[in-house]
Length: 151
Image (cartoon, rainbow, N blue to C red; front, side, top):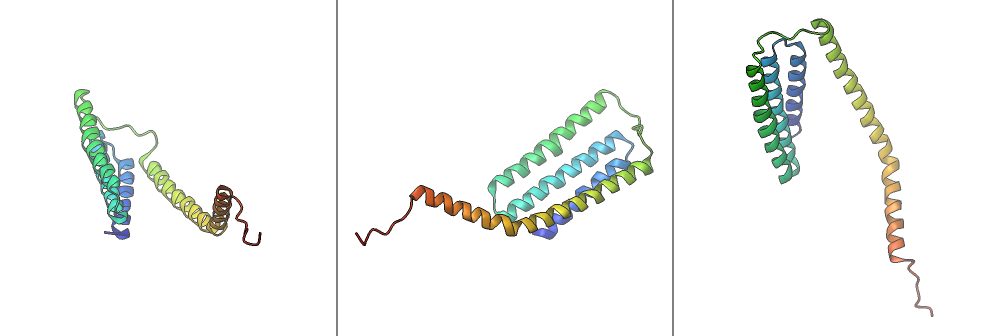
């Protein structure tokens, strides 16, 4: 399991988020939320397997237990208790909300790409500066090293 599994899970979560935008039934939205939370937990487990971090497995288990099971159960119970059976009234039309969601995804990918490029450009400047700062701090801790053999 590597980067391809992680990207597939992220694409699935994005697809579920876009599906939530066009849903009219509250119960269906809760189901999509639950499935999206499951994908989030799975992607955390994939990241844990990739970097061999036991703590991330715990985070994945908590995500699945809390978001997928507990929160979804509480939401469905509230819907049942309040007897919500009607569809959600959209604030804006369905095509306009779908367009806005897709536009938000495109903008997010553009900004994310720009940030990634900026990080790569700053990498060549920041890393040498950090090394020089680390060497200066190490020199300060030890004090100047003088060669006293000539005395």
